[in-house]
Length: 139
Image (tube, rainbow, N blue to C red):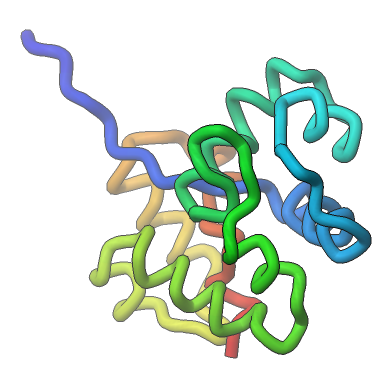
């Protein structure tokens, strides 16, 4: 039986998303490293490297070298935030999810079920794997 590659979608837990956005509002760091994320979010560097940094790169908030992009400025700006989240959502997640469960307030259980079915993860992972870039915060 061949190993099937599992589909995954980048996500950042909401608590970390908002804490990091708050830090960026104060000051955008010159480089986002696992050490920076660990200090800013109160987590281990290993966890930051495995769980937060890849999503920031996938969302193009930072580049592969951890350098903040133009999107980092948009992400911290309340006036540009919703539009940026919409761009990220459209670029990152399949159109079937985006169109079937559109913002501003999609049914969370439906989103969790969709993620669980598409990725093969369990309920707990689906709950934390909801694209926190905003199926609920953009209007």
